[in-house]
Amino acid sequence: MKKLAVRIITVMLALITLMSCAVTGAGAISFPNEVKFKSKRALMVNMDNWQTVFEQNADERCYPASTTKIMTFIVAYEHVDDIDKTKVTIKKSIIDKLKSTGSSMAHLDEHIGKKMSVKDLLYSMMVPSGNDAALTLADYIGGGSTDKFVKMMNEKAEELGCKDTHFMNPDGLHDENHYTTARDLYIITKHALTLPDFETISNATEWLCEGEKTPVVTTNYMIDKNRGGEYYYMYAKGIKTGTTDQAGRCLVTSATADKHSYLLILLGAPYKEGEYEEYDTFTDAADLFRWALTALELQTVKTSATPICERDVKLAWGKNKVTLVPEKDLNAVVPKDIAEKNIVVETSIDGEKDGEEKPLEAPLSPDKAVGTATVYYRANDNSELQKLATVNLVPAKQIDRSGILAVLDVMGTIFKSYWFLVIGAAIILILFIYVIVAKIHRKRMAKRRKVKRYRNF
Image (tube, rainbow, N blue to C red; front, side):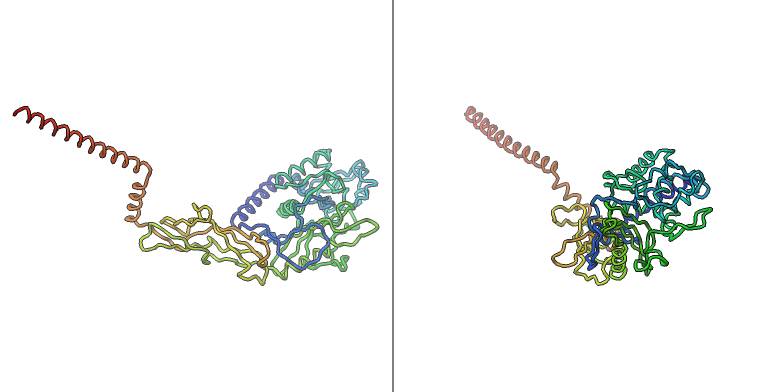
């Protein structure tokens, strides 16, 4: 039942998200900032309206390391009815596969032959980033086949709309054909956040598995006040770290302050075991969060009463102009110091082409859109336009149709129609021929009368 319920809930949440995106029309945008960071790829999204606020190389393929386990969590969680009561036997054959791989472990070798709950395994995978827990879950869900589980991971990625993601394993160990992008990883994480237990598990700093005396401890220093030291950031929450020589440092995390939340994906920060082992993702994340939380805010860029443009209107008695306004208030995350010159609006009115304005026809109602307005952000006169949103345009007021003008318009339309002109021309031609024929006929008749009169003499 739980599996079915989770699937129904996640589908509903996905539909709600899609509907929300259709209403707000929030687009991808990257606001300029002064943050200096070392991660090669970044994507930051405001979680209040799921608007992108910053990105760098977000569509570039790269290795995800242990951030892979976010997808492992999704597939495992969605295929287990009860994570508390479902028990999994820890197999020696699975643990042995990780020998000499340099894997981060949750010490499941101490439980070989015993059973652990799926819940404990999920914590063991996400908190200390245990590859042994990830492989054990994959083997169990895949019915003894890790390859089958990986296939399920790839199918889920495709279902979610990931365009540049391919998994080869459930733990993130390096493989040339195991890759994703910051944007795809955002899509995956956004879905994971809809699962009831994901946020709690991914934000835990430690977890004591059943029967254990020592808890497993998080690899994410940003959320660990006791062990994080200089990397601890009080506003951070979860989500997953990852590190290999090939992938570099990777991090998926979020932060909430002053009722604003941001989700951040960082991939490819410098790392080389034994040579360079700094945690640049943590400092990068903290700096980007500080910028976003202090420099950006959710504002009403255009209200439903803001005049966007005017158009001529026909068939309305005593009214020849109509003002068009946004269908709804347009809310977007923008810099706090944004000025009117930073906002550029381009309109598209139904029936107009190549910039040529055409009059709108009454009746017109505020309930019916007559076009759209695309709102852009421009940092300065020399910068490119970046799309904030597209909103429907509606008349500011109701404009009724005039019956008299409508009849006259119909008549005018008829008079200008192709077939009316053809028929009219044909009638004129017939009349012209008739006149000529009649004239010829009269001449002949007159000539005959003359001849008859002459004969009579």
